[in-house]
Image (tube, rainbow, N blue to C red; front, side, top):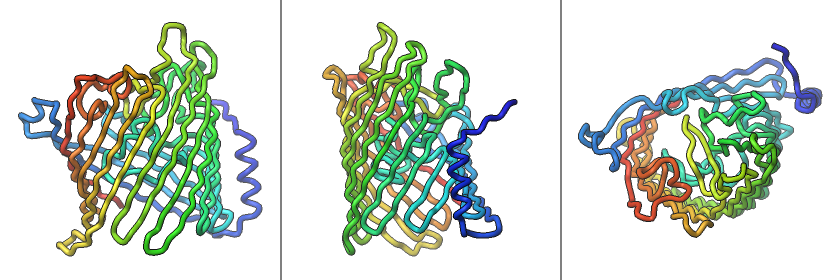
Length: 376
């Protein structure tokens, strides 16, 4: 197979190596996690008759290596085949100019909204299911982490690309939710700014904006999509508050007869429909309670809420609320969650279009979930 190398990224890291004064010997650190999951869902009568199901969730390997200031950070996960099988969650090359400035190249986290997570629970918050929380795409990102000012500048050529055919559709075997079907995310620019202030009450006021193209593999035309977000995070003693308000729009150039009020998104081995235009509001709060119960050292209680307000008048809104506790016992972290959803594809109802048209006669469904994860 002929191998080609992009000139610009290679040149960037060649220049960085010239100025590097970091360690003279290679460093390698390996880690990972093994997780099992128990769930009992209100919309699955046969599962309720069995008393729920307990089984394999995920196994992952993490690797961080560095030499002469240039490093790599990668995480590979393996889920069951029905949830997408093996996938690279993240993998990027990095360089730190100093303690505040860093450059990353590869499959790296999209700097949009509160990071690393806009939630506390195992399910994330509602924005994750629209590609707006813990999303990872292919591109270049610069990060400045000052004492009071933080900003991120990024360019993403496209989302994770697994099929390199001429007209290949986006593969659903991925960790991050991205636009799929006949449309592909291309040439996305992002800017994020955060102002940090406070001592006993630490506050992070932020604004994020992203804009990019949507290339349709049938019409060969490029539409666009954008998102704006205001976000605020606060830390006070053992309390944490996360809040976001987002405006999101997609304008695909679909074939005649295909609705442009709906887009397809995919992850974990399956696609579903999402409203093209919507507002999203989230509010999450947690409190840590230190304990001394044998190996158990901390209990984190939380409640995470999300509301998807769809712009199309005929579409029904989607809601999500998760109440739970994270139990820390050494390297074993156990999430005990009661996750409730209304027109939520992963919480009852119709998986295919709950996040799009939805069902005006839907009812709240819930899933009791316990996730056991040992992280090493």
